[in-house]
Image (cartoon, rainbow, N blue to C red; front, side, top):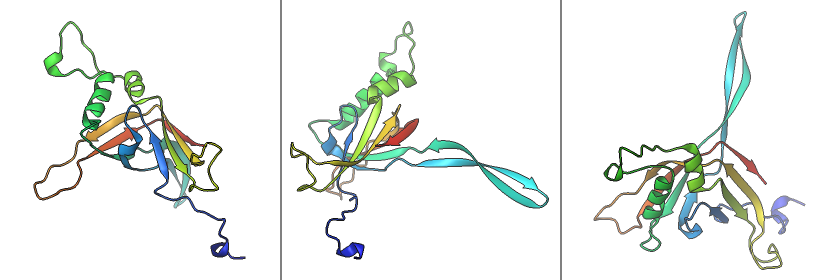
Length: 175
């Protein structure tokens, strides 16, 4: 039987996912990219030919788009993550307390693992508690916010204000 006639086959769907990240509520996370990696290459020339060998793996950044509601104020939450990372505003800087952002504090501020879960459709794919069954779960290790953009304002646009985050992490696994 052809796969398109088999009603039990269900592909993973783009709109069925949840993300866990620090104290940012899941419902404000509008979009996210999934983890990806690149492999460096080394070239070797020999008698007019080129040969390539795989090198080190680099996990690429992910980007998130957040909606910024009034309550909870997600802009404020993102800035609090920055402060917990070790950032001190110049107005609060005390020359006796020199401090800079560290990886340890940045990872702790965001949470040591960020999770992206893709879930099955509801119905027969639910567990005994009636919650969605996770069909794919990515775990991003040692994540920290690399960049935050707090959106644009425009008198001619009645859309929602969005925040764009870029997150760097060391590696990812899939469960």
